[in-house]
Length: 99
Image (cartoon, rainbow, N blue to C red; front, side, top):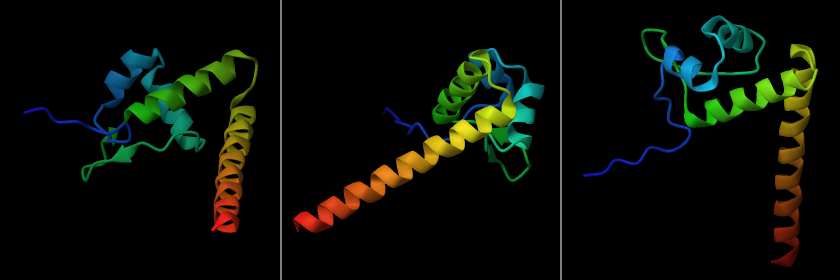
């Protein structure tokens, strides 16, 4: 029997994510404190990360390595989320028009 887990399923502990991304656990906690990352919390308060989180962490590190500071990264991520939201809204409006 094979079990498939979606990319948003929070399975990985902070130590595993740190190893996968090369980002120190304390830095991951800083990203969370700044609102750049929102890992799932177990009932006991343990952070759990998903494959989507791995991609987001890699995106953050890419933005940081391009010269942005954490505030700049936060702004870029906010603008990217807004752009995605607006594109989705436009697609919905176009779909409603064609009905």
